[in-house]
Amino acid sequence: MINVENLTRYYDDFCAVDNINFEIKKGEILGLLGPNGAGKTTTLRMLTGFLRPSSGNISVKDFNIQKDLLEIKKLIGYLPESAPLYYDMIVYDYLDFIANIRGIESNKVKERIRKLANLCAITAVMHKSIGELSKGYKQRVGLAHAMMSDPEVLVLDEPTSGLDPNQIIEIREIIKEIGKQKTVILSTHILSEVEATCDRVVIINQGKIVADGNTETLKQAGGKQHFLNISIAGVAFDEVKGLFKSFNEISEISLINHDQNILNVKVKCISEKDIRPDIYKKIKETDWILLDFHRETESLENIFRDLTKEN
Image (cartoon, rainbow, N blue to C red; front, side, top):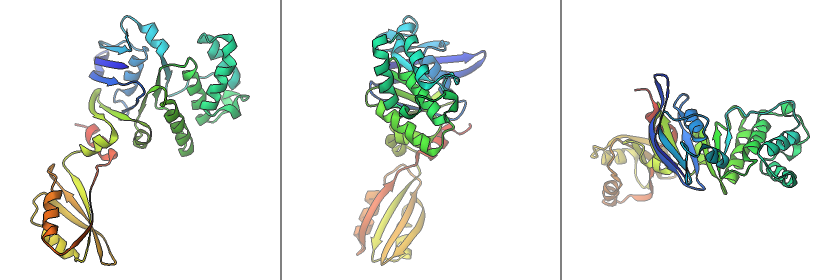
């Protein structure tokens, strides 16, 4: 659907986006994740044709951004971080105005506005002035604006920035509903947003892509350090510590709780090697009863911090 090749953008001598490559499949919700100033907004502006790349190429379907910019813009709906709304207009009048600008046939305008009002949950405020609305409702009106021409690709720059928790959940649900039919690209630095909404994550830092994959894949690949959670019956904590001391890969053994003869411990491993088979064999040699044994995946927050920390 979308192919980005060697994309680079300079502002004078400053390289905001540095030779990045990625593909986006049709129907995918992609999260562009990174700290402030990482190059997310610049990347989105190039994808939507608002900025010309210094070098590299973007293709959407069979169109090339160097030669078919207008055709690509027809395929994309774009909602910047601050929705470009006319605050003195009534919501319905504003969407009617946008429909006319986008060339929607006059006999289809009312039906299109009705569908967008339902999708974006703004039916209750269609009669109100945009300036009276909360930021959450303004974002929804901006979303309806971006969706007016029924684009195949929807690009959202920090769509939940400045919203309260309830508004974030509402916008998130709308995005997931839109993602059932559209390709969606959203930029954010909110980790929970990515985990709850996106099929795939591209993490960008200092203009470069530092990770690309779904959240579970990134967690599994999140560095050498990991933890094992083990529940055992019929054993004391000191016995477990004594048995596990023989493993060089284990740096720490912590007692979570000891309740009703069941011991729950957390084991910190400092090696990429999966030592679960070795631990299982050791426990099997005893008369302990193993109730639970699983690896705790790395949190996306820790992965993000490791990948985007200053050099």
